[in-house]
Image (tube, rainbow, N blue to C red; front, side):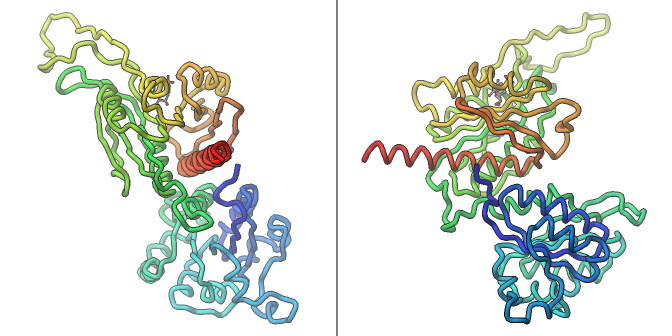
Length: 418
Ligand code: C5P
């Protein structure tokens, strides 16, 4: 499968900070996904990582000196900065940010940053007091106003022994930011899913016990919202049917907020026809058989009330088995703690959907409550095993898979009608 990074050219500028070592991991991950990486090492950066490591991982020359670029055989600095699709600065030190904000160009890295007409992403890393200093904050505000993209910094323990904002984002987070920068931009610059209607379910459901109490689960809705956003970025016409969450409604998406499984099913049915349905919601399997109209009172000496549960409708199975208006592609999720793939394959068949995103939620996976996810995409004719990724990147990949599937289906329909 092609990723949003396939054939993208990244110019990676490595500043002088302890976090520079993370640039090595980032290069590996970018190249794994089909991007090519050129490394530019600042003088201070060379105190933390060696040109040999960088050259080995990029498989290219490491650019260090402005005056290296002036001989005839070498590529000029304008060309070097413009020959990239994206410039990424890891780590972006207080010094580099200050120079960028003021347009200084005293060395190769800053010259390239000034000479470029390409988007630039910076991952700041510095001591918490340096980050919070008014001068740095002024520079950051200026750079944001100039259109420079930022990832991080994160809060956390710093190499200098302090705690607070200033810690560079992890390679996986920077990678996700780079992937989402590229996803949604087709080669032609058009929205490739324009005209495609997608229904996404997300979040938990709340099943009332009485007017003040309900049964719920811990779903945050993050994965479903990220999927809806990733598809909308590709130009799809997205309806997001969401149970109660704390997340803001994503821009450019038709949002339908519901509480119960039955309301969710009704909202989904009212959103059909659609070309694609992605059921990421953690729908409650059961609800209380009678929803009391008054608050159930605790009476002294009375027996503890017993709740009788009845099964909720299975939204994914219902949509998958529709005779009329069944979306051409129906995708479900399967959170498993063991035999992840085996159970998911069986679930795909049982529910009647086309794909299942099988999600390893075993305690050692760290998925529950975390930002990373390890999934397998199960289809009728095989499976893709994705590496551990931030939930945002899982959403981008799933959106990309949907796009590829639709493009393939369109091609074969054209062939048949010829
Ligand atoms: O059966 P299980 O809950 O493990 O299946 C998970 C998949 O089924 C998810 O895609 C979820 O959104 C969907 N589902 C549903 N309605 C239900 C239960 C699950 O759509 N009542």
